[in-house]
Length: 74
Image (cartoon, rainbow, N blue to C red; front, top):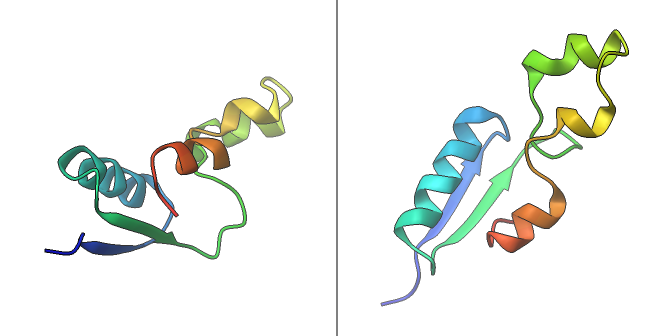
């Protein structure tokens, strides 16, 4: 039986939660997240703190391109 292929629309909390749940259940599944967002998953709640200069930009991101590759998510 071939590995399941899953396409998730959206790179927000729901999409990333779905990708993590799928990866937890199946290491073989081919998981792809499709989004028009040019950046990895970030915390929208932390955005005001970044804009105010209270946190550094890197602290906004909850995932990195490296973490997507590590977890086998395209």
